[in-house]
Length: 306
Image (cartoon, rainbow, N blue to C red; front, side, top):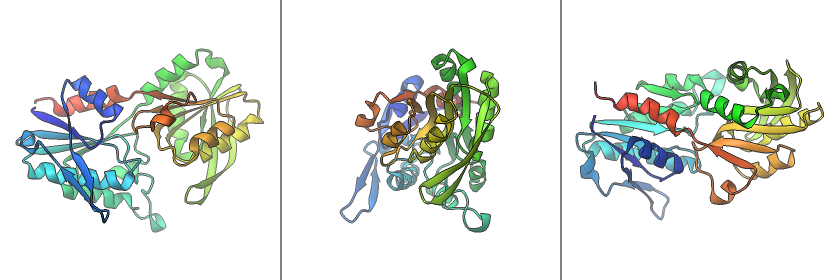
């Protein structure tokens, strides 16, 4: 299949995907006018005629700009003659807003409709925050799971697994962490929390089926770091001398890093689904693991001539 890769932002992940596929990573320009309106420009629009265009762009960080940017890019690619558009959005902004009033669809449904109306024919995401999100789309959606990558990283990082307990910081992570714990062969701690503000939570309790001295939290998203810090505070009084965290999508808003460091967490490991600011990436507290191979293996199947 003849295809082109295009992005709005040359991130480490986008470049790794392109290198693995042995393809050029083309750039589209996301411009902002004085009044705040956005515009997407393709310098080489002739390159996409009668081809599949693969957009590689997470919609986190500048979430509003990149959400609109992906939609505008899809529309522009259609106008340039692309016959199919696959959006690879490792982190999908607004994915935590899957529910609205009285359990009805949340704002993520509007984002799904926006992408489809703009011309996206297929979506590839990584570890969607809720399975319900896939129901908002009528186009094919692939949710890439990176559990095996996390398992391999934990096994390499913590060879003395007899001291390790995995931690699910909230109910939403229980099943996910349980699968990883079973694969590794360790026990786990199940925590629950409640939300009392837009970005404020409190941990209610933690129930363990294991005893250890090293706690390893696993979750899909770390935003403000509040939940992780609260869990660390709680478990430090339960004999856990070392605390670590594995998070797929590092939003790391505000003073999230400082909050987690001050709570006693020794280090966190995050994927490259979202780019980190240079100053943040340089902090020894944070280690980045790569998920490009997980995405490429799925993308190759989509692009394979049949």
